[in-house]
Length: 403
Ligand code: HSE
Image 1 (cartoon, rainbow, N blue to C red):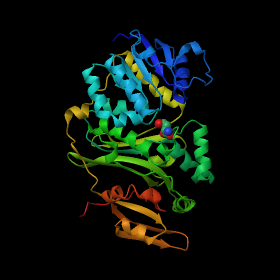
Image 2 (image 1 turned 30 degrees about the horizontal axis):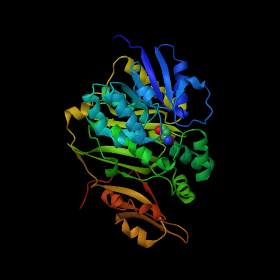
Image 3 (image 1 turned 60 degrees about the horizontal axis):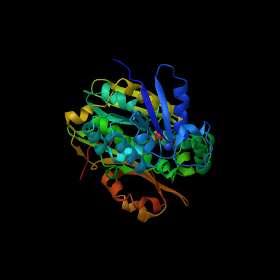
């Protein structure tokens, strides 16, 4: 296949944009030319000559010589404007913007068809781990039972530092910000939004369902306490933030994002710091484990580079699972076993625990381990931030949903 010379219009020159620039400068095999870089902030000092930059997006979008737009800004709605205009103008696009892809997934898939262009976004989920391309190409006909993992580098970094070094939450978060792992608004990381958006993107390729992120329950690590870390350590466990998607029957899946206890015999136990890990369970391939850096300019830049390279060969996602259309439903009606650390009995009661297996109460802390319905957790989603509680999925199997 002939390789097209790419004339790139780049949007954004932050952590990932600069990372990509470094990565492109050191990769000799690719014929690319960054024609212009569009940025917002006129006053920021840049590390390359100002003649490379523009502040007007139309300089890129209306330049017919530019055949690839690389979008790396963090304003999701502006990114959507840029990406959709670029596609309408017949340009292929590479993006790392998970918020934009997850929120506009279906529209973006349709636009690729309509305007006969390609949109690639490997960097949007798991950064350097090539999970989307694997789901598209390797698992295209596999019966995938489930996919779970660690998809947020910032929270994994925080949890690692709290567990291994006894750092407090805010110091660990500050370090993650300094290292360029966290989003500009770290709420996206610590409250589990980022992991959920990534899970929704992965679900599109794993099962062909373009979920509305609002339908997926997510919970983060903002309210973790030293008691929770100590509890996990005493049991020889670690706490990780784990998004999950899996089949509940032939044509139905469930998905959620929850902190989870991980024992040392599990793949995810040693996925520390900003690393991400993804475990797939499939009928024939059985269990597979992918791991790699999940955040940071160069790790994310490497995935963007891979998409740019794929683009030069004319690669497009085919959304094979969507074309097959075997999965059509998403359910939240299932029971999970959770650890709930809480203070007030009235809060505990709201969870509607069934089958409690452990209960502890002291002057300062209480916890309970038992099964709850995911639908109940979802119905509490707006109240949870105000409650003095922390939830961790135990990871033990609960047999069948009971009503
Ligand atoms: N803030 C994200 C993370 C960046 O920590 O994983 C990579 O998507």
